[in-house]
Length: 346
Image (tube, rainbow, N blue to C red; front, side, top):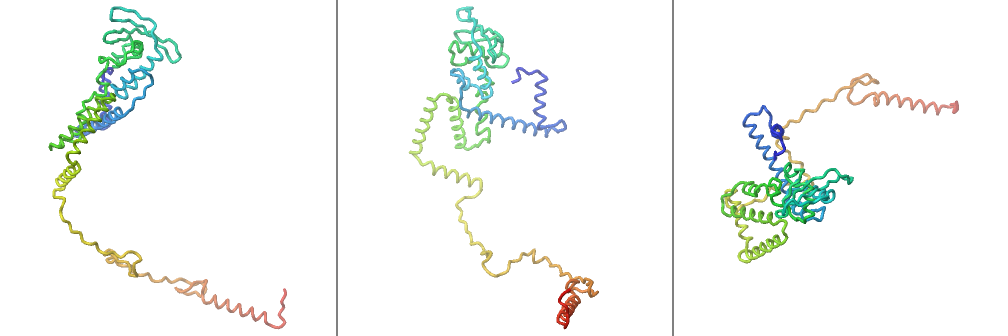
């Protein structure tokens, strides 16, 4: 992956990758732990990319068969770049001159346009009519690893439906990593029991078959038909549900360490009186019983400004003197109104 990187760039990229989890002050053990975390995160990103590549549906922007073939062999990220080259090779490139240098070799001049249909440059493509090999003067395949738009323009003219195998770089393909890396035994460990080993092998075989025939609709339909027939034959001979249940029970007994079918006696729970079922008081807990209640504080004496005494039963607003003064005032007012010769007007 470092074909275009300098030596210093390789070191800098490695340092930048490990700086995320590690520092220069770590010990050897700490560095190994950080190294494992970094590798796990990289594997996680690889698994996400593999899932996106395998679950993406083809959406072509041209009617060329070579675009669908590129989708079948390249990953999503690389196919996006190759698709741009195919589109530009169809709409922004055209052939201006074609000469025959030998019986099987053609020299083709391809003119490259920009988005405003202005000529930017002219490239020469050497095309072999036998094995469909091509080399362009831009050297895009040598520098990056996939064909350029000028070669795709020539392939469109020559009706080449598939990319030649010599131009398919393994590092950009879907099957760059072996399928054993993503197998169940590699991810979750190896179970020595024979049924578990065979189940993992069956899943790996089915996955490999689906990956090989992922673009061939006839092969996929045949594989589905064969699996359905095999399922019907197996289910007609023996009930798989009973065997599966027995296997699960044995595995549970092995994990728990005792048989599952043990008689268990369960007594009735104690009856608890719910809220509102009677007039009994709430049951106090031992913590509440052990906690001593503080004694009540005595009433504090206050000074009454009317009578000038320290009392605790009244204050200046409801003092006895106030009540007596109000009663005497009311009696005097009544006597004044009832006296003979009292004036009723000011």
